Image 1: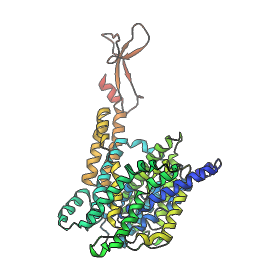
Image 2 (image 1 turned 135 degrees about the vertical axis):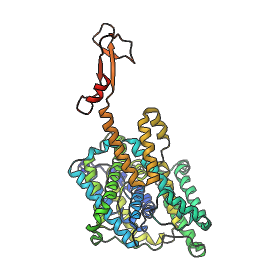
Image 3 (image 1 turned 180 degrees about the vertical axis):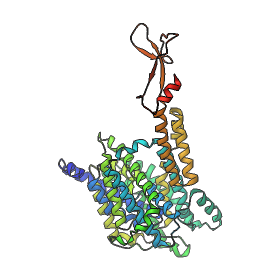
Image 4 (image 1 turned 45 degrees about the vertical axis):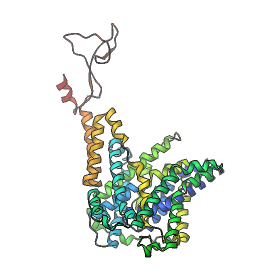
Length: 480
């Protein structure tokens, strides 16, 4: 238990830092969790369920001090895509599929932990992940246009199908809903980029400054809900709202688990488990490096596996680390995962006492929160960077990106992973071989393309920059 190890040197000021970071994370988690639940095709309250017990258990078992585990945009869109492909007959069946996917993803993660496969992320290249996340961000962004435009489009459609459905229904756009969505996007952009500078001018306490800077989404949620309530826009202008959110903690729903479904859900669940681990370990490693620490990959498999397993048992969908929330958690000064425990209790208190405030919350605002959260995931600059450094990586990035957009998330990530493995095998079987010559009269030999060296007409001296074994022998023979 990493948390038990950290508590040995825990100080009073660490508790204060964790408590404040947890409160700030709660302010972000509540609106974002509801938005990501809609992204997964489920009612808004399931995003809050996902952020309580599963997040609490991750905090007990996780090896990253800064990760904020709960509803995540990428995993939510994968759940929607996977369940949508199975064409569930009704909402209850849709929830059943989502719950079983979460449980299976947890099982796969625990199996990976059992076989100590934490290092397998080394075989998935960064360009493949970049191409996948960029394409997924575009799919996520497109999927939320229906809420901002006030259109009725089924959940789980592909990128091209969603665009076609939006085009067909453009004549039925709800102008008031569109106005709310546009103003919400502008407000979120202001609170993220401009408002923090204005707050600094007021010379508040740094902790108050940070809390105010991160409270933008919650402020927009409450203001928009009040405007809809005051002007009765849900009845007068047919603005879609969240509606009644059940109060209290969700009950365990083991009855939702159905072994008969597991065969057809196995592949999407495995891919979701892989992406849950890859994204979480990537974010966790990046944040840990800022503290000169390391994240234990196998411990993360255990923590994420248990969190997803319990997420399925508590009747909600799969979860992972959120890039945006984790960054905020880190910058807010989280010292240990106690910050995540504070956040989980904050979400629970919201479910117990504050759900009536969200009845009139427009779905357009939740759509805007998702859109503004995933825009930063689109990494256009990675293409030019890879093109300059290694064109093979650039090709794999572009191939993954286009495959995800055209054929869907599951096919795209499968192609990306298979492509990464093939690339590793290809590079291992085609080692770099340099013809070398003698440097002056010394005993040193260097690459003839890079140094001024002497060579002999009847002697070929080469250097193989790889261990010689059965897969690359033929390539070396061909070169000679």
